[in-house]
Amino acid sequence: MKTYAYFPGCSLEKMAYSYHQSAIETTRALGVELKELEDWNCCGATAYFHVDELLAFTLCARNIAMAEKEQLDLVAPCSGCYKNAYFAREALLHDPDLAEHINEALAEDNLQFAGTSKIHHLIEIFAFDIGPDAIKAKVTNPLKGLRVAPYYGCQILRPRKGKEDVERPRFFEDIVAATGATPVEYLLRLRCCGGALIITNRMAALSMVRNLLECAVRARADLIVTACPLCQVNLECYQKQVNREFGTELNVPVIYFTQLLGLALGIPPKRLGIGSELVAVMPAIEQALRTEPAPAAT
Amino acid sequence: MSAVTSAQPPKEVDAGVSFVEEINHLLYAAKGNPINTCIQCGTCSATCPVASAGYMDNSPRRLIAMIRAGFKEQVLKANTFWYCASCYQCTVRCPRGIDIAELMYGLKRYTVWRSEYQEGLIGPSFSETFVKMIVRTGRSYEPVLATSYLFTYGLPEIIQEAQTATALMLKGRLPLLPARIKRLDNFRRMIRKIIPLGEPE
Image 1 (cartoon, chains in turn cyan, purple):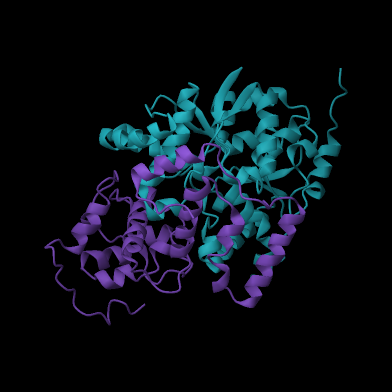
Image 2 (cartoon, helix red, strand yellow):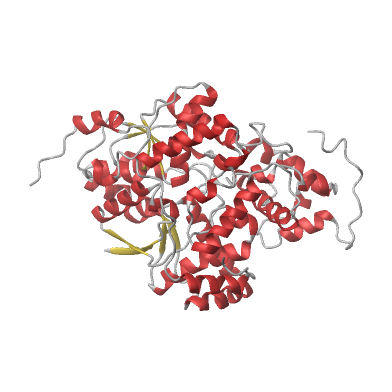
């Protein structure tokens, strides 16, 4: 069983607890263990980098150093945490003076950064380490007939990290297809959800959310799946506000890709945290779950 | 939109360092090219979801032109970088390899250090509240953050926010108590090695 150091990030403690639950359930079902860092801290989000880059790198380095102590690669389910950890590691690896300075601070917590642990987003574990074929082999409830819009968002892909196709990625569609659902093709799958602008420039963010949702709905998506807690909150929890501000009637469920996977793997919706959404999910998935009942346990 | 046309001619900078040089220094650590290499093609503005929706007073392309022309005051008072959502679409598409999103981060820090940002923006106070919170507890806690922006909202927005918060609360998705890390003393000593901190209240 492959083991990763798991850095859930602040959102997954409460706001996106269902992402945490479904991440644990689905990795376990697919033979991967997520071992939570014992005393992780906030990655700094975007706000910290607005004020002091050195301190923001230090925050990230502390989490990375804890993973190194365990001799495990670090996995983050949040795109912001992932991007920050990834580029903090790059910066420290390429600037020995910076690393020395930060290591002096980390010594206060008996930690050292050496750069031995790599950084992954959770979706990369499913897309590349496990792979769609191995997922497909474990699917007991193919989600036939369900039209699912995979939403990549920004920071998994951007800035470039040297491996991904930033303009035409397919790995998210492949994961959706592995569940038996139909991946929906729509134009704005890589477009920003507004991120933290939902707080600092509400109307700009709401208009971005509106464009995205309308684009997915026009492509006849039953459901949108995300790989980031901030994307999920913006696209789902602010739908009512979008409807209020723009006179739209949007009502499309938005769940985490791990929840979709879990359903296909036959994990009960409740154990995947389904039911904590503001836009009800069950009406969209009921038919898919009914048409293909789970094979009797043997 | 008339920031440039109504502007005074750029002033000389005391230290003998031009504004564009200052900005290039801010970007020194970024891997991209200096902004002098910009060809004003406008790919950044066209690809920016905020600029193209009309929410920025100066588009990224225009902001770069203003920096190069030395319009320092107007640049620092622009809302462009505070309305950047860090989606990095400009950075990956810039044909000259300029890390434009990182430029936006650099300008945010520059204006926070100098307290010279446009009045009425939520971004700067939100960021500072966030930093203070992390230094205190090591973790993020949404209800504290709300205090940094709710006062700028009108009544209809506050009601909508309250409805969203209530719905989230009923679903068990809002934390009632702030989380903190375990080794907080070590954490604070670590931070003091990086920046001088006032003693915690």
